Amino acid sequence: MSRPSPARSQQRPFGTALRPALAAAAVLAAAACPVAAPAVAQAAGAPMHGAAPKTTITAIEKQAMCVTCKIPLPEAQSPQATRERAFIKRQIAAGLSEAQVKRALVAEYGQAVLGLPSTHGFDLAAYIVPPIVVLMGLGALALLVPRWRRRAREAPDPVDALEGPALDPADVARLDQDLARFKL
Image 1 (cartoon, rainbow, N blue to C red):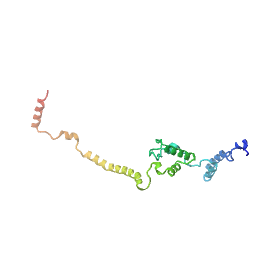
Image 2: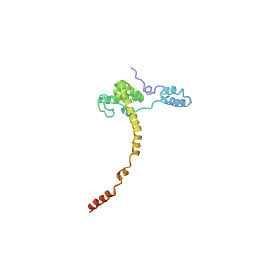
Image 3: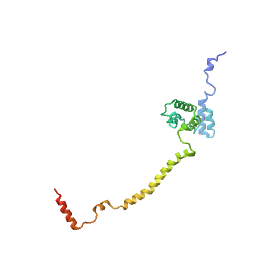
Image 4: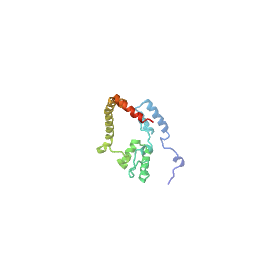
């Protein structure tokens, strides 16, 4: 058996030394010729212009559920939750975007991992009914508020209601006598 020479094993594979130069060429190509930029960027191993931003574990965790606990993944402490987090980390390390990681989660664990109702069938009502209820409430307010304001304008003045009709002079005299009797 022959062992590789130390000098040979420490050499970098061909192309890795050129990677910074190719990345710089990708930037220049994007500025000079937008049509050729994706091909140069891909050859350089650099992220393409307009590529999806790198996602984080916390961004995905906030949108995922533990499929056994049925609680949000950030709060779950089960072995299944640990496996889901490891799966997400592997997908992110592979360079997948947030949407791609979510698709991989659904493929691996099913639709329940996202904790969202499906967008077809009866579950579609979860997306349609709340906006309809809000719009109906706003419509009811639009109809009722003008009526309430009109009734408030047409209502008699409370001060006028307290004064009442004028008293007969005989009643006024009798009221004054009664009040004078109770004065201390």
